[in-house]
Each structure stands twice: as structure tokens, then as C-alpha cells.
Length: 412
Image (cartoon, rainbow, N blue to C red):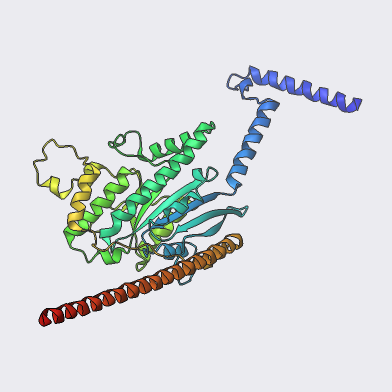
């Protein structure tokens, strides 16, 4: 140990002499003491590096809600995204599936939960179930609309937007009351998507969670007249922009357009790159991400264009847009009747037992009422017969009395 220590001291002495000689050389720079790192700095950097690696390798878990018009191709869109070569079956109520992706050299498995709401707007209350405080910060909503049936689009889009906003704000308000910072982070992210310098930032209602309006069956929309197609595009652009949503047109019959929906679901579900292209021409399939559009770019509704618009603001209230839209696409006279749901597909033993009991009670009550009605009818018939019989007797008595009087009168 001592020999080793002596040798170390000699080495240090030699190093010190070399350092002294090097200092005498005019072109040699001295080491900067500030560049030296102490033990605590090295530990902190090591922990930061480990944390960064662990975050990069952490499992990503997101949730996508697919809602919209009945028969708009929601199930086909989901199956295409999941790479499932299946024939879609009619959806019932609220259905769940999931997708998984392996990422990175560590084979990290990311998961996206997918909820599909069937029945258009009639079952929208079911969205109360899966939207929770634990997943609101990783949630995305896709509203799928049938472009081949434009007269019913607003009747589907408006209620769904209201339902989504109401539920999201309710969840965020609950988080804020408990001091959570997530609501503020989500709202700041929504503002960032538009940009604080956006000309319409004070006119739109930003959504704390991403919303994408998807117009399906674009291939059937191409047969529309140019002015009708233009009105439909402007209306949907307005609805998307004022609600802080993205807007894309897709078609399952076109590979390029079908890939759009897959790309959008991958963007929201697995945080892949956002679509880079932008299409605003109403003669082409629209693709506008949230924050890319403006009221000036959308223009005015037809009834306002014909007026003197010099100096007029480009923002027009929703009701004016809707009144013009209905002129082009009148609402159908026959309203859609709510579909009945086959509850036998969702058995609940306790509820089913009570339901059977109540059905039996209802049947007994119905039979008792039927018997009462029959008894009442029988008594009524008997009473009418009795009254009819007494009337005939009185009539007969009156006739005989009259003949007797007549005979007496003739005798007299």
C-alpha cells in the first residue's frame, strides 16, 4: 500500500511539473475550472437521462370515440385502421375494441381504446359511461357524417357536438375543483393548435380535447351539382372551424381517401405525424386540420353574398348559415323513428328476473281489466234488455187502453 502510495505521489509531482512547463508555453490554454462537474451534477444528469429514456419507453395509452350518422361507415373505418379483413356487422349501442402497436427497440406496446356509438344521436347519453377523469387527457372524438345524405347532417352534428362539449366540460370542472392542472394544460394545448395570433381566436370555441369531423362516402357526393357541393363544404368548414375541430372527407371505395381515416386515427391514437397536406377546394376532398381555416377563407353564406358586403365582417352567426343550408338541403318530411334495441344480447340476471316478474304482473293486471270490461259489458247488455222489455209492455198497455177507449167511444 505504501509503495503504491509513493508511486502515486511521484506521478502527481511529474504531472505538476509538466503542467508548470505547459503553463510557460504561451500558446497553451489552461483548463477551465467551471467545466469540471462535481459528483452531484453527474448524479442529476444521470437521473435525467434515465427519466428521459423511461418516458420514451413508457406505454402510450389513448382513447378514441367514434360517433356519428347511422350507416356512415364507422365500423368499416375502425376495421380498416385495425387491419382486420372482416365484413362489418351492424353495431349495437356502445361497442368496444382496441388496437395495439409495437414501438422502438424495446418493443414497447402502445394501446388505443376505441369506443363506437351506434344509432346516431339517440344513444348519445351512453357516452357518459366511458368518458372519465382518468382518460379525458388522452381522449379524441371522431364524428362521422354521411355526405350522401346532407339533409340530415346538421341534425346529427349539432347534438353530438353539444353532448361532447357538455360531458368534457363537466369532467374538467370536476378536476379543477380538486386542484388538478390537467384542464389548464388541455386548454393551453387547444390554444396552441390554433395559435394565439390566429385572426379568429376570439370568435371560435376551442375544444380542450381534439375533435375531427369526418365526411364519409365522398364518392357519392361527387354527383352533386357544383353549388350544392360548395354549400355543403362551406357549411361543414364553418361548423368545424367555430368548434375548434379538424375536417376531412374520406371514402372506403378509394384507397387514397380510405388511408386518410387510418392516418387520422393513428395520429390521435398512436401520436404519429399529423397530415401535412391541406385541401380547401370544394371540388376536391377536404382536408383541414384544426387551426388552419379562417372565416375569411370560408366566405359568406349565399344570401349574404348577394348583399352589399363592402366593409362587412366575414363572421356570420350560425343561424344564418343554417337557414341558407336548409334552402339547398331541405329537411325530410318523415322523421327517423328511434330504433328498438334487442336487449337479449345484453343479459343481466338480476334485471331480467325483475323484468319477468313485472311482465307477469302486467299480464295479470291486463287480464283482470279485461274481465272487468267483459262483466261491465254483460251488465250493460242485461240492463238494456230489461229497459227494452219494459218499454214494450208499456207500449202494449197503451195500445189496449186506446182500443178499449175507442170501442167505448163507438158504442156511445
